[in-house]
Length: 526
Image 1 (cartoon, rainbow, N blue to C red):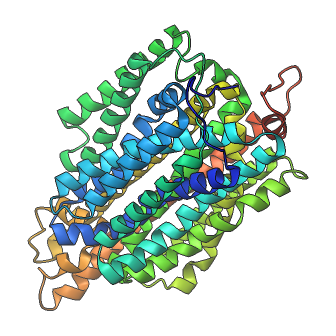
Image 2 (spheres, one colour; image 1 turned 180 degrees about the vertical axis):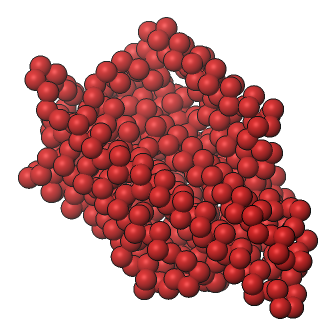
């Protein structure tokens, strides 16, 4: 077990306060991603920013969140989980508050990147705090609540942000997030401090190669549609990402106590648990970022209406994680996880019926189906991930799982956004000559404005009889590209479902060991 810092007076531990603080903090982290996505059209319009710079408001947060997760987990094991939790909350609060007052898009992107660093510190320390505070069945329930808190953040993030943008502008979203995270700081005196007595220091080579690879790859995906996929810079970035990733693998293999224990990937069950959030990033998280702009720019919804419509997608993620945990006692986890991916894939395929005339009522079916699939899986994954290593290195375990989760989200959002812009550009280029528009020789800017939810402002440049036809043409081009992206997302999930079931099948002579009864029960259920 981890030990308390020697010579330090430990406060009286309050498990209930620990659980509340962890769940509120961890629920806020996904809300900062999905809520901000609803505010992007307003941010771009108010600051006069390009699509790329506006995308970095989300991408910078997710990129640093994922990039430093491994290092944050190791540092939490060494420095102390409570101390790391407090430092992370402080960084997140200050940077988010700063984002609410700046008027420069570059500075906003930088602050969001720093907020992502704070978020990584919070999440890895929070998972370890739960693992050290609760044992046995209580730990199972605690991680069930943790899964529900993620669902709550995802569910309320878009809708709450829509209401805030409508009432007080995009800055109100960041102010609200900063206030909530600041309030959690008052719980620090009631949390238990713990460290890994066998900690060997930070794996700098692994941290730098992994972070560099993820940054280079994400930057290539974001810049690809703008500079062209054959651009020397994009090619160099992709090659650099691959080289650094190979360097990361070599560095981790040489470490006696690596941040990322690659040997765990020899266990099919661990591979499946780690692969699930990556697949869900394509089928669910991408939609949380891309759909609000479509609703606002193409369907003509207000920010408030777009946020409320997103509840159809994210609402089930709030309600189902605890029910899924109870259902796993009678239904094999591999069946539940495979079935959840099938639901997400089928829902994404159903959503290809969306067009500029779609109403909220017409979107109920596909959005609820996708949300139901995600809600089932969210109640099953976190406890199994933490149970893969000894409790002494709970921070490392949380870091590994959440790094894969956030890496998947970062790559999926950047990749699918890039594909959407590229497809929209190609469709616009095929027919833009029919209209007298300043965008005739600049379809890239027009595609960016459409994807950013600013079609109405772009259409003001076309007057007279061509105006309505131009709006229809751009809307149809964007919608066609969006349908293609949805089919890709559906294929990823539908093909991933049987792979997950196969990886989780029972194997003789390959038991999964775990340090506690609760973790053992969780993993053995696979």
